Image 1 (cartoon, helix red, strand yellow):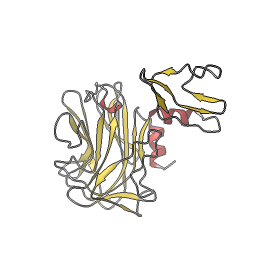
Image 2 (tube, rainbow, N blue to C red; image 1 turned 90 degrees about the horizontal axis):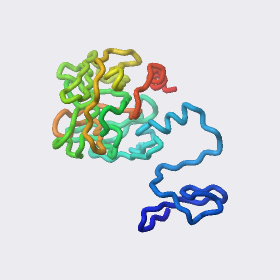
Image 3 (cartoon, rainbow, N blue to C red; image 1 turned 120 degrees about the vertical axis):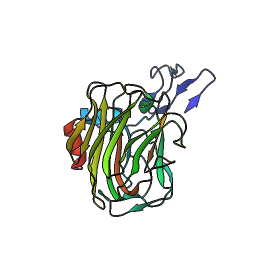
Image 4 (cartoon, rainbow, N blue to C red; image 1 turned 30 degrees about the vertical axis):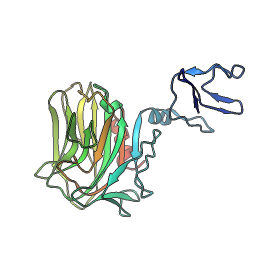
Length: 258
């Protein structure tokens, strides 16, 4: 990759395939702008695959005992005091078992954009369900200063709850989640349908329509903690973030590991 003082970018030239140029016969006429996450496959992708590439923000499977993002954007995680278990919902899973254990992914621009739809899908296997944050969204890595909300977590009575924000908290509370057993949780949002909570492939509750008031900056997701309070104890697996509202059929596919 080359970038000159005018911020023109010519990315790569593979034989007769050029990224960033205006044509095969004008190689010095550079594209004016930025390109990112370029990939090549030697077949035609179908519509579902293209939609996934365009809207999948992150996918951490934990199967390789790493925090590598298997989605198209490669937003790999970092963390502290975490481990992996071979007893995952699908192959291996992330385990958080101490009072300051969590994983973070950062640079999430669409989750920082007001009104932008989103979906978060995760399998949870808690060893304790009396409080604890599963998914926390914030402007800072500390999770304390600036814009921040716990998006998915447990109430003090062990019920699953999801939250969004429109100038005040928009909350939905679901059932008590069993300990030492895998449960699938999905939170979705769109300006038209509001917020929806799915547990084990069933729609549990929904809000009225509202506009998500985001942080206005690239955001950070923390898995397993809000950093300051609310530690989750147990295992997490198959973590997805989408920049759109998933359909019931797509949620069913995630539940059934399709």
